[in-house]
Image (cartoon, rainbow over all chains, first blue to last red; front, side):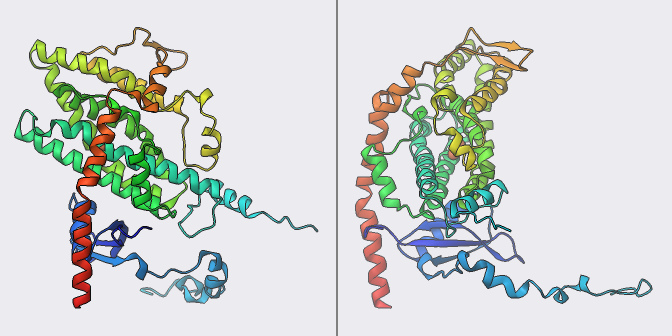
Length: 95
Length: 312
Ligand SMILES: [Fe+2]
Ligand SMILES: [Fe+2]
């Protein structure tokens, strides 16, 4: 990256009231205000959003894909966390 | 028992074969990364330069409605460029470097944009044919192996079909108008038909990298396959308009269930790629000028942001 380049921002958009903000992509902008304005033009030209978050890309920390196997392994053998693990007698309703 | 140890590269290929997407931080072969950066940035450059031939007609659109539509389309193309540059950046390419490579002529963009847009009918042909060809190229890329690229293409494809339809509507309006308007439409088709066929790239026999790209699923159909699809799609549409495709060899072929068509003039294609097309200099010149004249704005915005940050 070169010095003249505007910082990179990650853009998150709430597509409609009641839903989560979802990552849609990134863009360059000098500051947060400009990032939001640019995000409006780049990612919501067809009413794709009702709310925008921008985060400078450098502030996003990510898990390491190389560790994925070990990192998520603890959840692997805990099938009792799922409702389907339990047998409910046929005669029991509403459970 | 002997365990089979897969190399990193074999594991990578196995994921691709299983249609598992590759994401930015995943391990990938250098050649995959390099090829993708080239492909995505070339695509981004094409969107960017692609604004110029149409931008040429915004101030001269025949009605306010056409002007608004054209403006919206050109704005979409800017958006497509931005989605794609940001996808390329996830591979480690810098935006400044990509733009520098475009401006120096080191990076290529689609040769189609080196042809001039002489009449309003060209706006029809660009939307109908050029965006039509782009759609054929792009739809399969929504399933490409690299996640950020595939997601960018989904966004692009959602927007392209309006582009093609507005172009077709321009053609249809001209074809239903006065004889001089229809003649203008035919003349534009005559000029755009062959260059559009060239958009799919060299014949398969002359595309040595196709096999590797198909293996990596960053290309899902060969150039000739896409070209054939395009001809099969477009000939009936031209007939509907009452226009004639400028190729005497176009003829329905029952055995292959598609149209036969003539040979593309590859000498012209390579000549334009090498920079000798009608508008290469004008297009690149306009890009460089806009970039240079915008430099003070970029610097000022950055200085302003830094000052505000320092003030707290
Ligand atoms: Fe586009
Ligand atoms: Fe388009």
